[in-house]
Image (cartoon, rainbow, N blue to C red):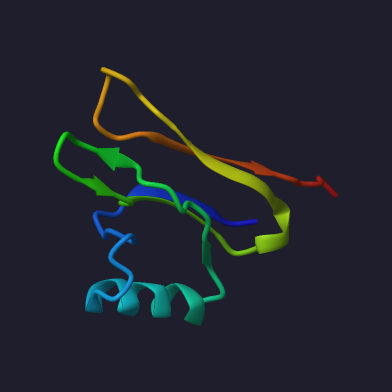
Length: 87
């Protein structure tokens, strides 16, 4: 199981942007999936999806979402529920 979470600063809401297309191509070429689909940074003038949660196994992630941080930060926290078995 591989899971990566990070503030990548590539706004995945801009689906037609060249850098977004390249980034998604790189993820797919390594068999990686980015699970977050909602904005993770919200300001009075903009919304962006720049905090990502990436895994190599899609079927192990049963749920992913964003937790608003309120007044602590303008970034929301991303999380995922992962079904993992220790063998």
